[in-house]
Image 1: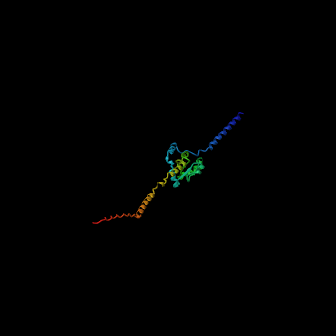
Image 2: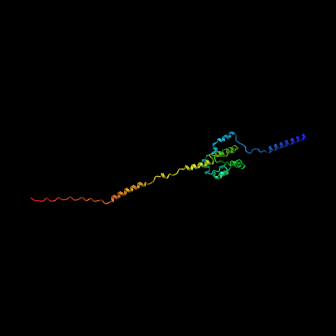
Image 3: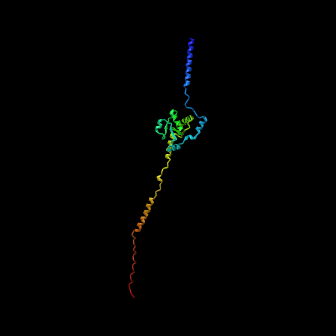
Length: 213
């Protein structure tokens, strides 16, 4: 009886050990590793060159510089409603997918800089820092995000100087011209009017005094 129990315990121990060994042998090492030290991470956070201003982003768009690629980290619905021209949509939920990481690596090999943006800057800070810690150095962040850029462009359009037509000075002062013409007409009419002849009455002659010597 005791031997049966002992045999069962030995078999259970062997099975348990086998499971542990199989688990160790089949366990994969993490594919995502941090490449930066704490000091390097802090230096990356303090590096202002990793941020792209809205003005700089607009210049890149207008120049159609192929060395820069805008990456929209918002979800597909937000991307469909509006996005930067030429931007690629990689939602945050798929940022660490194999296909996404391969794209980031290939872009780095081709010396292309990825400009990450979301609805605002805070939405992109953590994903950017995570990729930075993984050793990707070809990443920048758009200041203010998509909302900040669109608001900046709207404010710039509203601040354009408008022509004030009410402030224009007329070339001719038609009121004064009318007054001058009226004066000239009155003077001409007065000059051409017939002159009134005034006839003075002739003085009466005195009658001769009557009588003689």
